[in-house]
Amino acid sequence: MDSSKSTLERLGKIGIVPVVVLENADDAIPLARALMKGGLPCAEVTFRTDAAEESIRRIAKEFPEMLVGAGTVLTTDQADRAIAAGAKFVVAPGLNPKVVKHVLSKNIPMCPGTCTPSDIEAALDLGLNIVKFFPAEPSGGLKMIKALGSAYVNVKFMPTGGINAENIRDYLAYNKIFACGGSWMVKGELIKAGKFDEIERLVREAVEIVKEVRG
Ligand code: 3PG
Image 1 (cartoon, rainbow, N blue to C red):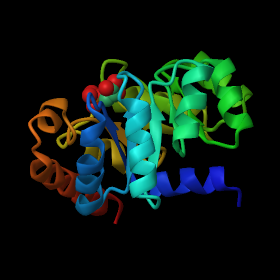
Image 2 (cartoon, rainbow, N blue to C red):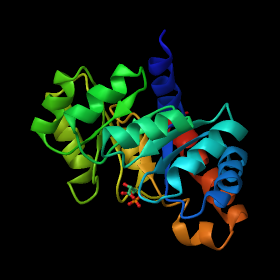
Image 3 (tube, protein in one colour):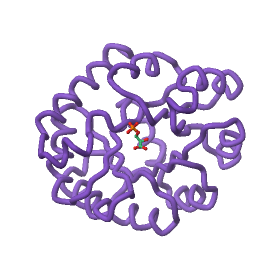
Image 4 (cartoon, rainbow, N blue to C red):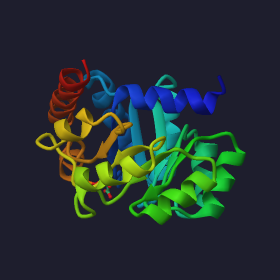
């Protein structure tokens, strides 16, 4: 199996991808440690801050077993920087064919954002059958995913945007949900306040929900 496929399979098994915004790369290791201790060996570090690239570099070095990826990757340049820093997967809010092709050419898995049938067909055209569904709750949530899933039978979804400890059960119970993305357990204010124990607690709670729903 190629490494790109096994990365995705591991993410799918974990079932939750924490979406992290790090303002300060010094928070990267404590955050990654809290995720690991809580039972979530993965993270999507978003390229919304200048600290993203260095944060990915530090996490990839300190926790080589962790699946650290880059989120909000909008350009091929960001993709290159993320991959060079050690990102093992790449996520974007939308589907930019140029960025998708570029990332796939490096044998790194890419999960682009979709929220319409046309987006999904563009993803299929690029050879992808696992897509992010973003922004999930404002775009119709699980009801919309089920409608899309009945038409695109081989597509799996990673809903992100508005997922939390209350509604994640319903998403995870649908067999076309690959994993759920979200920031609820790694909120920026918790990171800024250094509340890594609280993050670990929320992560543990989220992991329990996955076990409960998926067995
Ligand atoms: C984001 O855009 O920040 C991610 O999609 C996460 O969304 P959330 O903060 O609603 O979980």
